[in-house]
Length: 115
Image 1 (cartoon, rainbow, N blue to C red):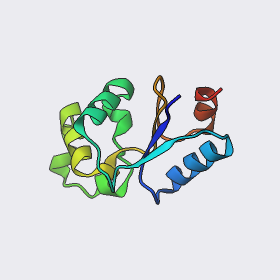
Image 2 (cartoon, one colour):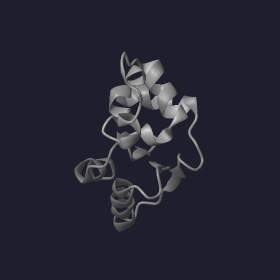
Image 3 (tube, rainbow, N blue to C red):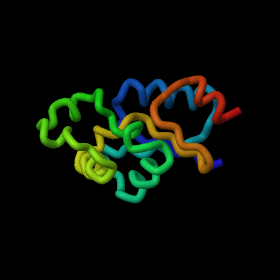
Image 4 (cartoon, helix red, strand yellow):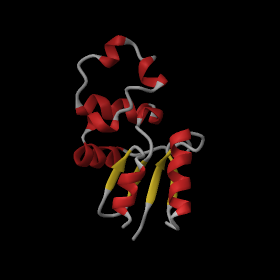
């Protein structure tokens, strides 16, 4: 099974998710979308699978600092454009296993995905 975890290197939630994967012997590739970017195709696929509302990190500082005009009237297309422009607005981590997509870190969800 090919596993890729997407996120930002210094994010505390990312550190917890990577520690969980390491502790359970799960081999994975790490894609830092702040350093390496992310393409529209990934975001569109994730939004289709998980919902753009799940994918968009509204609780983060980057989103909260947006002008009200950017936050109002959000649609999938507008949310994807915001996440492309500022990847730190993508909820972290995003984990792809080939058959499963997990957004955010919950140990019980990881346990289920790898059992």
